[in-house]
Length: 278
Image 1 (cartoon, rainbow, N blue to C red):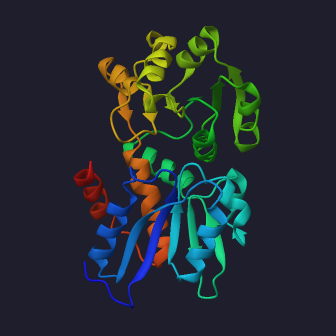
Image 2: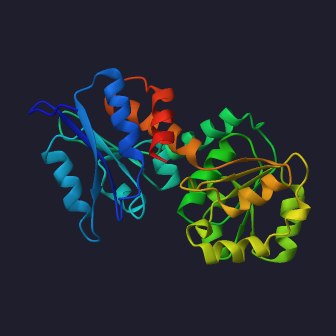
């Protein structure tokens, strides 16, 4: 990669950020279309988000992606929000125009819907979402817009209630009874918890799930992409179709690429770059 004074900059904001695969995807896409740009990780310590955004404007960035823990905080610092980001209350893509105006977008919602489309998951299936944190917001909104009736099971019912305006039909407590009935009725199950990031917590969550209630045609999805979550391994062992978070990551990145560059995303190149970075 050759850098010059004309090279444009883009990046991904988060804390920590060393684990992100986004630089590999976007830089591969830049090379594929011959764009003189480079995409870098941007570690932003707590309390420095506003300063970081000022830096993006000052250096004339094409834009940036935003990841944990700033997706909700960054929304209040944008000059304008697209309809999806406004509805979800979360931003994962920033675009900067020639006047330095900062617009916030959410490509996670459409990216998750794209991932389900890619897997051939039928629209309108009864869906069960596990968890009610930030990741669940984009998932619930995506599912509702695909026509799925959505049930959420959450350990924090108050947090879960915030998903009702996004399209959740009901929010239920994390009990054996609720899990049993929810898994039995679901055609699509989505793990939107953070349990897979903690091996101890993951095993505890898996032990609480009566997976024998799952029907033969149930599709099981998770958002983690750095390894196969235990839930997906267990579902696969039962002969069920599964999907981890890699497809969502690639599709949301492709949409973000187009927003920042105005160019169609080379999806196959980005998918291959993800596989090589794994």
